[in-house]
Amino acid sequence: MSAIRLLVLGAVRQHGRAHGYQVRNDLEFWGAHEWSNAKPGSIYHALKQMAKQGLLHAHEIAPSTAGGPPRTEYELTDSGNVEYFSLLREALTSYDQKMDVLSAGIGFIVDLDRREAVELLRERVRGLEEWRSSVTEYYTPEEGPESLGHIGEIMNFWVHSADAGAQWTRGLIERIEDGAYTFAGEGEPFVGVLAEGQENPYATGVPHEGDLS
Amino acid sequence: MSAIRLLVLGAVRQHGRAHGYQVRNDLEFWGAHEWSNAKPGSIYHALKQMAKQGLLHAHEIAPSTAGGPPRTEYELTDSGNVEYFSLLREALTSYDQKMDVLSAGIGFIVDLDRREAVELLRERVRGLEEWRSSVTEYYTPEEGPESLGHIGEIMNFWVHSADAGAQWTRGLIERIEDGAYTFAGEGEPFVGVLAEGQENPYATGVPHEGDLS
DNA sequence: TACCTCCTAATCAACTTTGACTAGGGTACG
DNA sequence: CGTACCCTAGTCAAAGTTGATTAGGAGGTA
Image (cartoon, rainbow over all chains, first blue to last red; front, side):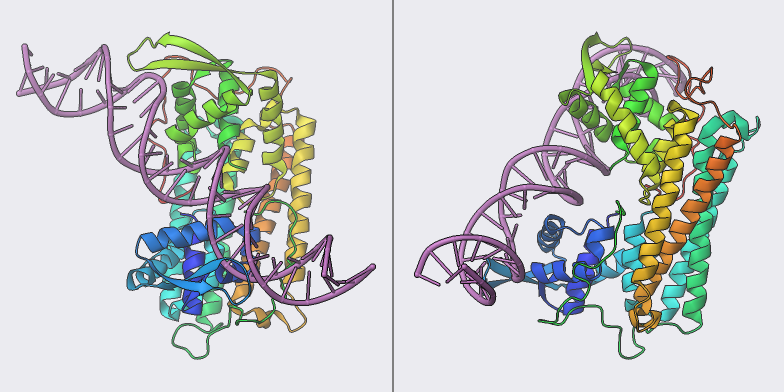
Protein backbone atom coordinates (compact mmCIF):
# COMPACT_ATOMS: atom_id res chain seq x y z
CA MET A 1 0.00 0.00 0.00
CA SER A 2 1.31 3.37 -0.98
CA ALA A 3 0.35 6.49 0.92
CA ILE A 4 -0.64 8.55 -2.08
CA ARG A 5 -4.29 7.54 -2.31
CA LEU A 6 -4.92 8.10 1.35
CA LEU A 7 -3.22 11.48 1.23
CA VAL A 8 -5.10 12.61 -1.87
CA LEU A 9 -8.48 11.37 -0.69
CA GLY A 10 -7.91 12.97 2.71
CA ALA A 11 -6.90 16.27 1.18
CA VAL A 12 -9.84 16.42 -1.21
CA ARG A 13 -12.17 15.39 1.58
CA GLN A 14 -11.08 18.22 3.89
CA HIS A 15 -11.86 20.73 1.18
CA GLY A 16 -15.11 19.10 0.14
CA ARG A 17 -14.11 19.89 -3.41
CA ALA A 18 -10.62 20.54 -4.69
CA HIS A 19 -8.53 20.66 -7.82
CA GLY A 20 -5.15 19.06 -8.26
CA TYR A 21 -3.08 22.08 -7.49
CA GLN A 22 -4.93 22.63 -4.25
CA VAL A 23 -4.23 19.06 -3.18
CA ARG A 24 -0.63 19.48 -4.18
CA ASN A 25 -0.41 22.60 -2.05
CA ASP A 26 -1.96 20.96 0.97
CA LEU A 27 0.43 18.07 0.77
CA GLU A 28 3.33 20.46 0.52
CA PHE A 29 1.96 22.35 3.51
CA TRP A 30 2.00 19.07 5.41
CA GLY A 31 5.54 18.45 4.25
CA ALA A 32 4.30 15.29 2.56
CA HIS A 33 6.54 15.76 -0.45
CA GLU A 34 9.42 15.22 1.96
CA TRP A 35 8.35 11.95 3.48
CA SER A 36 6.05 10.39 0.89
CA ASN A 37 5.70 9.99 -2.85
CA ALA A 38 3.36 12.98 -3.06
CA LYS A 39 4.92 14.49 -6.16
CA PRO A 40 2.91 16.30 -8.85
CA GLY A 41 2.89 13.38 -11.23
CA SER A 42 1.72 10.97 -8.58
CA ILE A 43 -0.98 13.30 -7.31
CA TYR A 44 -2.52 13.98 -10.71
CA HIS A 45 -2.25 10.34 -11.62
CA ALA A 46 -3.98 9.29 -8.42
CA LEU A 47 -6.76 11.82 -8.98
CA LYS A 48 -7.43 10.61 -12.50
CA GLN A 49 -7.20 6.97 -11.56
CA MET A 50 -9.54 7.33 -8.64
CA ALA A 51 -11.96 9.33 -10.78
CA LYS A 52 -11.90 6.51 -13.31
CA GLN A 53 -12.63 4.03 -10.54
CA GLY A 54 -15.55 6.04 -9.26
CA LEU A 55 -13.96 7.08 -5.97
CA LEU A 56 -13.91 10.71 -7.03
CA HIS A 57 -16.30 12.70 -9.14
CA ALA A 58 -14.60 15.06 -11.60
CA HIS A 59 -16.08 18.47 -12.40
CA GLU A 60 -14.66 20.06 -15.52
CA ILE A 61 -14.13 23.70 -14.73
CA ALA A 62 -13.48 26.75 -16.90
CA PRO A 63 -9.94 28.13 -17.03
CA SER A 64 -8.71 29.12 -13.62
CA THR A 65 -8.96 32.56 -12.10
CA ALA A 66 -5.20 32.92 -12.06
CA GLY A 67 -3.68 31.79 -15.31
CA GLY A 68 -2.63 28.32 -16.20
CA PRO A 69 -4.49 25.51 -17.94
CA PRO A 70 -8.12 24.68 -17.24
CA ARG A 71 -8.47 22.71 -14.09
CA THR A 72 -10.66 19.92 -12.87
CA GLU A 73 -12.27 19.86 -9.47
CA TYR A 74 -12.78 16.61 -7.61
CA GLU A 75 -15.19 15.55 -4.95
CA LEU A 76 -15.41 12.28 -3.01
CA THR A 77 -18.20 9.97 -4.03
CA ASP A 78 -19.83 7.68 -1.50
CA SER A 79 -17.54 4.84 -2.45
CA GLY A 80 -14.63 7.28 -2.25
CA ASN A 81 -15.58 8.01 1.31
CA VAL A 82 -15.78 4.32 2.10
CA GLU A 83 -12.39 3.77 0.47
CA TYR A 84 -10.91 6.66 2.43
CA PHE A 85 -11.85 5.16 5.76
CA SER A 86 -10.76 1.74 4.63
CA LEU A 87 -7.32 3.06 3.69
CA LEU A 88 -7.11 5.06 6.89
CA ARG A 89 -7.89 2.04 9.05
CA GLU A 90 -5.39 -0.06 7.16
CA ALA A 91 -2.69 2.60 7.49
CA LEU A 92 -3.14 2.65 11.26
CA THR A 93 -3.27 -1.09 11.83
CA SER A 94 -0.91 -2.55 9.27
CA TYR A 95 2.43 -2.82 10.98
CA ASP A 96 4.68 -2.62 7.97
CA GLN A 97 7.55 -0.28 8.50
CA LYS A 98 6.73 2.29 5.90
CA MET A 99 6.89 5.65 7.58
CA ASP A 100 4.84 7.38 4.93
CA VAL A 101 1.75 5.24 5.34
CA LEU A 102 1.70 5.48 9.12
CA SER A 103 2.47 9.20 9.03
CA ALA A 104 -0.46 9.78 6.72
CA GLY A 105 -2.65 7.66 8.96
CA ILE A 106 -1.71 9.68 12.03
CA GLY A 107 -2.38 12.85 10.08
CA PHE A 108 -5.96 11.79 9.49
CA ILE A 109 -6.56 9.82 12.67
CA VAL A 110 -8.87 12.46 14.07
CA ASP A 111 -11.35 11.72 11.27
CA LEU A 112 -12.22 8.59 13.26
CA ASP A 113 -13.87 8.63 16.62
CA ARG A 114 -11.70 8.30 19.68
CA ARG A 115 -12.83 4.82 20.57
CA GLU A 116 -12.08 3.38 17.15
CA ALA A 117 -8.71 5.12 16.94
CA VAL A 118 -7.62 3.44 20.14
CA GLU A 119 -8.97 0.12 18.96
CA LEU A 120 -7.03 0.29 15.70
CA LEU A 121 -3.82 1.23 17.47
CA ARG A 122 -4.23 -1.70 19.84
CA GLU A 123 -4.62 -3.90 16.80
CA ARG A 124 -1.38 -2.43 15.53
CA VAL A 125 0.41 -3.33 18.74
CA ARG A 126 -0.94 -6.87 18.55
CA GLY A 127 0.35 -7.20 15.00
CA LEU A 128 3.78 -5.94 15.97
CA GLU A 129 3.99 -8.37 18.88
CA GLU A 130 3.00 -11.26 16.66
CA TRP A 131 5.56 -10.28 14.09
CA ARG A 132 8.23 -10.00 16.75
CA SER A 133 7.59 -13.46 18.08
CA SER A 134 7.50 -14.98 14.62
CA VAL A 135 10.89 -13.46 13.86
CA THR A 136 12.48 -14.54 17.12
CA GLU A 137 11.26 -18.08 16.56
CA TYR A 138 12.72 -18.05 13.10
CA TYR A 139 16.15 -16.82 14.00
CA THR A 140 16.92 -19.13 16.88
CA PRO A 141 17.35 -22.46 15.14
CA GLU A 142 18.61 -25.47 17.07
CA GLU A 143 22.22 -24.77 16.16
CA GLY A 144 22.10 -21.44 17.98
CA PRO A 145 22.03 -17.92 16.60
CA GLU A 146 25.57 -18.10 15.28
CA SER A 147 24.47 -20.48 12.56
CA LEU A 148 22.90 -17.53 10.80
CA GLY A 149 26.09 -15.48 10.81
CA HIS A 150 25.64 -11.82 10.11
CA ILE A 151 22.20 -12.61 8.69
CA GLY A 152 21.00 -12.78 12.26
CA GLU A 153 21.58 -9.04 12.44
CA ILE A 154 18.76 -8.52 10.00
CA MET A 155 16.36 -10.30 12.32
CA ASN A 156 17.83 -8.41 15.24
CA PHE A 157 17.08 -5.19 13.42
CA TRP A 158 13.51 -6.25 12.78
CA VAL A 159 12.98 -7.11 16.42
CA HIS A 160 14.32 -3.72 17.43
CA SER A 161 12.01 -2.02 14.96
CA ALA A 162 9.02 -3.96 16.17
CA ASP A 163 9.76 -3.11 19.79
CA ALA A 164 10.29 0.56 19.06
CA GLY A 165 7.11 0.71 17.00
CA ALA A 166 5.06 -1.02 19.66
CA GLN A 167 6.41 1.21 22.39
CA TRP A 168 5.61 4.36 20.48
CA THR A 169 2.12 3.10 19.65
CA ARG A 170 1.42 2.34 23.30
CA GLY A 171 2.42 5.87 24.21
CA LEU A 172 0.07 7.28 21.62
CA ILE A 173 -2.79 5.10 22.85
CA GLU A 174 -2.25 6.40 26.35
CA ARG A 175 -2.26 10.02 25.27
CA ILE A 176 -5.43 9.53 23.28
CA GLU A 177 -7.14 7.77 26.16
CA ASP A 178 -6.12 10.62 28.43
CA GLY A 179 -8.13 12.97 26.25
CA ALA A 180 -5.53 14.43 23.91
CA TYR A 181 -6.61 15.95 20.59
CA THR A 182 -10.06 16.48 19.14
CA PHE A 183 -11.63 13.54 17.34
CA ALA A 184 -14.63 13.23 15.04
CA GLY A 185 -17.82 14.45 16.65
CA GLU A 186 -16.01 16.20 19.49
CA GLY A 187 -16.39 19.77 18.31
CA GLU A 188 -14.21 22.10 16.31
CA PRO A 189 -11.71 19.94 14.41
CA PHE A 190 -8.06 20.77 14.03
CA VAL A 191 -7.53 22.83 10.88
CA GLY A 192 -5.14 21.07 8.57
CA VAL A 193 -5.66 22.75 5.25
CA LEU A 194 -4.94 26.14 3.84
CA ALA A 195 -7.95 28.32 3.18
CA GLU A 196 -8.14 29.71 -0.32
CA GLY A 197 -5.58 32.50 -0.52
CA GLN A 198 -3.94 31.80 2.83
CA GLU A 199 -0.18 31.72 2.59
CA ASN A 200 1.83 28.64 3.47
CA PRO A 201 4.20 29.34 6.36
CA TYR A 202 6.10 26.11 5.75
CA ALA A 203 6.31 26.33 1.98
CA THR A 204 10.09 26.13 1.86
CA GLY A 205 11.29 25.94 5.47
CA VAL A 206 10.76 22.24 6.01
CA PRO A 207 14.02 20.76 7.24
CA HIS A 208 15.32 17.70 5.54
CA GLU A 209 18.65 16.01 5.08
CA GLY A 210 18.77 12.98 2.85
CA ASP A 211 16.11 10.57 1.73
CA LEU A 212 13.24 10.04 4.12
CA SER A 213 10.73 8.51 1.75
CA MET B 1 16.42 3.85 -3.81
CA SER B 2 14.77 0.49 -4.11
CA ALA B 3 16.42 -2.65 -2.81
CA ILE B 4 15.94 -4.74 -5.91
CA ARG B 5 19.09 -3.77 -7.77
CA LEU B 6 21.29 -4.31 -4.77
CA LEU B 7 19.68 -7.67 -4.10
CA VAL B 8 19.96 -8.83 -7.69
CA LEU B 9 23.54 -7.66 -8.15
CA GLY B 10 24.52 -9.22 -4.85
CA ALA B 11 22.90 -12.53 -5.74
CA VAL B 12 24.47 -12.73 -9.18
CA ARG B 13 27.80 -11.72 -7.74
CA GLN B 14 27.83 -14.52 -5.16
CA HIS B 15 27.27 -17.06 -7.91
CA GLY B 16 29.73 -15.49 -10.31
CA ARG B 17 27.25 -16.29 -13.02
CA ALA B 18 23.54 -16.87 -12.60
CA HIS B 19 20.27 -16.98 -14.48
CA GLY B 20 17.07 -15.31 -13.40
CA TYR B 21 15.51 -18.30 -11.74
CA GLN B 22 18.61 -18.87 -9.66
CA VAL B 23 18.51 -15.29 -8.42
CA ARG B 24 14.84 -15.64 -7.72
CA ASN B 25 15.55 -18.76 -5.68
CA ASP B 26 18.33 -17.15 -3.68
CA LEU B 27 16.14 -14.22 -2.82
CA GLU B 28 13.40 -16.57 -1.72
CA PHE B 29 15.97 -18.46 0.34
CA TRP B 30 16.83 -15.20 2.05
CA GLY B 31 13.14 -14.52 2.60
CA ALA B 32 13.54 -11.38 0.49
CA HIS B 33 10.18 -11.82 -1.20
CA GLU B 34 8.70 -11.24 2.25
CA TRP B 35 10.36 -7.96 3.09
CA SER B 36 11.29 -6.45 -0.26
CA ASN B 37 9.93 -6.05 -3.77
CA ALA B 38 11.87 -9.08 -4.98
CA LYS B 39 9.06 -10.55 -7.06
CA PRO B 40 9.63 -12.42 -10.34
CA GLY B 41 8.63 -9.49 -12.52
CA SER B 42 10.91 -7.10 -10.67
CA ILE B 43 13.85 -9.50 -10.72
CA TYR B 44 13.71 -10.22 -14.44
CA HIS B 45 13.12 -6.58 -15.18
CA ALA B 46 16.10 -5.54 -13.09
CA LEU B 47 18.32 -8.11 -14.81
CA LYS B 48 17.34 -6.92 -18.28
CA GLN B 49 17.61 -3.27 -17.38
CA MET B 50 21.02 -3.64 -15.80
CA ALA B 51 22.19 -5.70 -18.76
CA LYS B 52 21.06 -2.88 -21.04
CA GLN B 53 22.97 -0.41 -18.89
CA GLY B 54 26.13 -2.46 -19.02
CA LEU B 55 26.15 -3.47 -15.36
CA LEU B 56 25.59 -7.09 -16.26
CA HIS B 57 26.76 -9.16 -19.18
CA ALA B 58 24.11 -11.50 -20.61
CA HIS B 59 25.02 -14.94 -21.97
CA GLU B 60 22.33 -16.50 -24.11
CA ILE B 61 22.12 -20.15 -23.13
CA ALA B 62 20.49 -23.18 -24.75
CA PRO B 63 17.23 -24.51 -23.25
CA SER B 64 17.63 -25.45 -19.63
CA THR B 65 18.45 -28.89 -18.30
CA ALA B 66 15.13 -29.19 -16.54
CA GLY B 67 12.29 -28.09 -18.79
CA GLY B 68 11.02 -24.58 -19.17
CA PRO B 69 11.99 -21.83 -21.59
CA PRO B 70 15.58 -21.06 -22.61
CA ARG B 71 17.37 -19.08 -19.98
CA THR B 72 19.91 -16.30 -19.92
CA GLU B 73 22.89 -16.24 -17.62
CA TYR B 74 24.24 -13.01 -16.23
CA GLU B 75 27.60 -11.95 -14.91
CA LEU B 76 28.69 -8.67 -13.30
CA THR B 77 30.76 -6.41 -15.49
CA ASP B 78 33.37 -4.11 -13.96
CA SER B 79 30.94 -1.23 -13.82
CA GLY B 80 28.40 -3.63 -12.34
CA ASN B 81 30.83 -4.35 -9.55
CA VAL B 82 31.38 -0.66 -8.97
CA GLU B 83 27.63 -0.08 -8.93
CA TYR B 84 27.16 -2.94 -6.48
CA PHE B 85 29.49 -1.43 -3.93
CA SER B 86 28.04 2.00 -4.49
CA LEU B 87 24.53 0.71 -3.79
CA LEU B 88 25.76 -1.27 -0.81
CA ARG B 89 27.44 1.76 0.75
CA GLU B 90 24.36 3.87 0.15
CA ALA B 91 22.09 1.23 1.67
CA LEU B 92 24.15 1.20 4.85
CA THR B 93 24.54 4.95 5.29
CA SER B 94 21.28 6.41 4.03
CA TYR B 95 19.08 6.70 7.06
CA ASP B 96 15.70 6.53 5.42
CA GLN B 97 13.39 4.18 7.17
CA LYS B 98 12.96 1.61 4.48
CA MET B 99 13.54 -1.73 6.06
CA ASP B 100 14.17 -3.51 2.78
CA VAL B 101 17.14 -1.39 1.77
CA LEU B 102 18.85 -1.61 5.12
CA SER B 103 18.10 -5.31 5.41
CA ALA B 104 19.69 -5.94 2.03
CA GLY B 105 22.67 -3.82 3.04
CA ILE B 106 23.18 -5.83 6.22
CA GLY B 107 22.90 -9.01 4.23
CA PHE B 108 25.84 -7.97 2.09
CA ILE B 109 27.80 -5.97 4.65
CA VAL B 110 30.48 -8.65 4.89
CA ASP B 111 31.47 -7.92 1.28
CA LEU B 112 33.14 -4.81 2.65
CA ASP B 113 36.11 -4.82 4.92
CA ARG B 114 35.52 -4.46 8.62
CA ARG B 115 36.95 -0.97 8.90
CA GLU B 116 34.76 0.43 6.16
CA ALA B 117 31.65 -1.27 7.48
CA VAL B 118 32.10 0.44 10.82
CA GLU B 119 32.78 3.75 9.13
CA LEU B 120 29.60 3.55 7.08
CA LEU B 121 27.52 2.66 10.10
CA ARG B 122 28.94 5.60 12.02
CA GLU B 123 27.95 7.77 9.11
CA ARG B 124 24.47 6.33 9.42
CA VAL B 125 24.30 7.25 13.08
CA ARG B 126 25.43 10.78 12.30
CA GLY B 127 22.69 11.10 9.69
CA LEU B 128 20.05 9.85 12.10
CA GLU B 129 21.15 12.30 14.76
CA GLU B 130 21.04 15.17 12.32
CA TRP B 131 17.61 14.17 11.17
CA ARG B 132 16.39 13.93 14.74
CA SER B 133 17.55 17.39 15.63
CA SER B 134 16.09 18.89 12.47
CA VAL B 135 12.71 17.35 13.31
CA THR B 136 12.74 18.47 16.93
CA GLU B 137 13.58 21.99 15.87
CA TYR B 138 10.71 21.96 13.43
CA TYR B 139 8.05 20.74 15.77
CA THR B 140 8.64 23.04 18.69
CA PRO B 141 7.44 26.36 17.29
CA GLU B 142 7.17 29.37 19.57
CA GLU B 143 3.53 28.68 20.38
CA GLY B 144 4.44 25.35 21.96
CA PRO B 145 3.92 21.82 20.70
CA GLU B 146 0.13 22.03 21.12
CA SER B 147 -0.12 24.39 18.17
CA LEU B 148 0.52 21.42 15.92
CA GLY B 149 -2.31 19.36 17.38
CA HIS B 150 -2.20 15.69 16.57
CA ILE B 151 0.22 16.47 13.75
CA GLY B 152 2.90 16.69 16.41
CA GLU B 153 2.48 12.94 16.85
CA ILE B 154 3.93 12.42 13.40
CA MET B 155 7.12 14.21 14.40
CA ASN B 156 7.11 12.34 17.67
CA PHE B 157 6.98 9.10 15.73
CA TRP B 158 9.90 10.17 13.56
CA VAL B 159 11.99 11.04 16.58
CA HIS B 160 11.25 7.66 18.11
CA SER B 161 12.22 5.94 14.87
CA ALA B 162 15.44 7.89 14.62
CA ASP B 163 16.37 7.05 18.19
CA ALA B 164 15.59 3.38 17.79
CA GLY B 165 17.52 3.22 14.53
CA ALA B 166 20.55 4.96 16.00
CA GLN B 167 20.56 2.76 19.06
CA TRP B 168 20.42 -0.41 17.02
CA THR B 169 23.16 0.83 14.72
CA ARG B 170 25.42 1.63 17.68
CA GLY B 171 24.92 -1.90 18.93
CA LEU B 172 25.88 -3.35 15.60
CA ILE B 173 28.98 -1.17 15.40
CA GLU B 174 30.04 -2.43 18.79
CA ARG B 175 29.58 -6.08 17.86
CA ILE B 176 31.53 -5.62 14.66
CA GLU B 177 34.35 -3.85 16.45
CA ASP B 178 34.43 -6.68 18.95
CA GLY B 179 35.25 -9.04 16.11
CA ALA B 180 31.89 -10.52 15.21
CA TYR B 181 31.36 -12.07 11.76
CA THR B 182 33.78 -12.64 8.93
CA PHE B 183 34.40 -9.71 6.60
CA ALA B 184 36.06 -9.44 3.21
CA GLY B 185 39.65 -10.68 3.23
CA GLU B 186 39.29 -12.39 6.59
CA GLY B 187 39.09 -15.98 5.41
CA GLU B 188 36.23 -18.31 4.56
CA PRO B 189 33.18 -16.15 3.96
CA PHE B 190 29.71 -16.95 5.26
CA VAL B 191 27.81 -19.01 2.71
CA GLY B 192 24.63 -17.25 1.71
CA VAL B 193 23.56 -18.96 -1.47
CA LEU B 194 22.29 -22.35 -2.42
CA ALA B 195 24.65 -24.55 -4.35
CA GLU B 196 23.22 -25.98 -7.55
CA GLY B 197 20.84 -28.74 -6.56
CA GLN B 198 20.90 -28.03 -2.83
CA GLU B 199 17.43 -27.91 -1.34
CA ASN B 200 16.07 -24.83 0.32
CA PRO B 201 15.25 -25.49 3.98
CA TYR B 202 13.31 -22.22 4.25
CA ALA B 203 11.43 -22.48 0.97
CA THR B 204 8.00 -22.21 2.56
CA GLY B 205 8.53 -21.97 6.29
CA VAL B 206 9.31 -18.26 6.49
CA PRO B 207 6.98 -16.77 9.05
CA HIS B 208 5.02 -13.71 8.10
CA GLU B 209 1.82 -12.06 9.20
CA GLY B 210 0.70 -9.07 7.22
CA ASP B 211 2.58 -6.69 5.01
CA LEU B 212 6.22 -6.18 5.80
CA SER B 213 7.40 -4.75 2.51
C1' DT C 1 7.49 48.77 -23.59
C1' DA C 2 10.32 44.93 -23.74
C1' DC C 3 12.27 41.57 -21.01
C1' DC C 4 12.74 38.48 -17.24
C1' DT C 5 11.16 35.85 -13.65
C1' DC C 6 7.75 33.69 -10.92
C1' DC C 7 3.27 31.43 -10.12
C1' DT C 8 -0.53 28.48 -11.51
C1' DA C 9 -1.95 24.16 -13.24
C1' DA C 10 -1.14 20.35 -15.40
C1' DT C 11 0.99 16.91 -18.88
C1' DC C 12 4.38 13.61 -20.62
C1' DA C 13 7.79 9.99 -21.50
C1' DA C 14 10.57 6.93 -19.27
C1' DC C 15 11.02 3.78 -15.88
C1' DT C 16 9.57 0.49 -12.10
C1' DT C 17 6.45 -2.58 -9.81
C1' DT C 18 2.75 -5.86 -9.51
C1' DG C 19 0.22 -10.04 -10.04
C1' DA C 20 -1.47 -12.92 -13.26
C1' DC C 21 -0.38 -15.75 -16.95
C1' DT C 22 2.21 -19.05 -20.37
C1' DA C 23 4.33 -23.22 -21.69
C1' DG C 24 6.98 -27.32 -21.49
C1' DG C 25 8.26 -31.25 -18.99
C1' DG C 26 8.16 -34.48 -14.88
C1' DT C 27 5.67 -37.24 -11.48
C1' DA C 28 2.19 -39.38 -8.49
C1' DC C 29 -1.92 -41.97 -8.65
C1' DG C 30 -6.29 -44.19 -9.46
C1' DC D 1 -2.70 -44.80 -19.42
C1' DG D 2 -4.55 -40.50 -18.79
C1' DT D 3 -4.89 -36.74 -16.04
C1' DA D 4 -4.11 -33.71 -12.42
C1' DC D 5 -0.69 -31.37 -10.34
C1' DC D 6 3.83 -29.41 -9.61
C1' DC D 7 8.38 -27.44 -11.04
C1' DT D 8 11.19 -24.64 -14.15
C1' DA D 9 11.81 -20.33 -16.39
C1' DG D 10 10.14 -16.49 -17.90
C1' DT D 11 6.64 -12.97 -20.23
C1' DC D 12 3.09 -9.51 -20.20
C1' DA D 13 -0.38 -5.86 -19.47
C1' DA D 14 -1.80 -2.71 -16.22
C1' DA D 15 -0.74 0.30 -12.71
C1' DG D 16 2.20 3.37 -10.21
C1' DT D 17 6.21 6.63 -9.83
C1' DT D 18 9.59 10.09 -11.24
C1' DG D 19 11.52 14.26 -12.91
C1' DA D 20 11.37 17.20 -16.57
C1' DT D 21 8.65 20.09 -19.28
C1' DT D 22 4.82 23.03 -21.06
C1' DA D 23 2.10 27.16 -21.36
C1' DG D 24 -0.37 31.13 -20.07
C1' DG D 25 -0.71 35.08 -17.24
C1' DA D 26 1.03 38.44 -13.48
C1' DG D 27 4.32 41.39 -11.63
C1' DG D 28 8.67 43.82 -11.43
C1' DT D 29 12.19 46.65 -13.68
C1' DA D 30 15.43 49.05 -16.73
